[in-house]
Length: 127
Image (tube, rainbow, N blue to C red; front, side, top):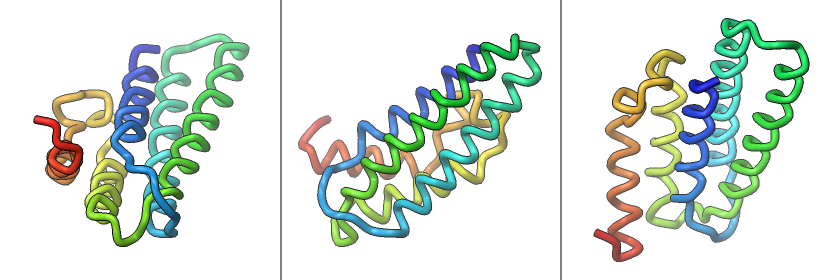
């Protein structure tokens, strides 16, 4: 159950960093790919943890809703935005991680995501 929270935290953290503007397809595809990877890893972990069928059924819609929420947020990111390509690169780099790597916060932070987060902080004037 703890690893499902880690996956959920990864998605939520990335969603919070997304700027809000006007839509594009590449970022939607990257978000969809990442969501599918996270969902797949979470469901595999749930299967290993021998949870009740009721709890499994409860988890699936929660993961689906997180993905739908993330996809709706990234559709608002403009192609010309300075954060657009770094956000795509970050999501694609996370999608390439193994499920095991995604469960470890130290290994989950890719170089592309570190660059994206730094750029997002700089853009917002945060330190």
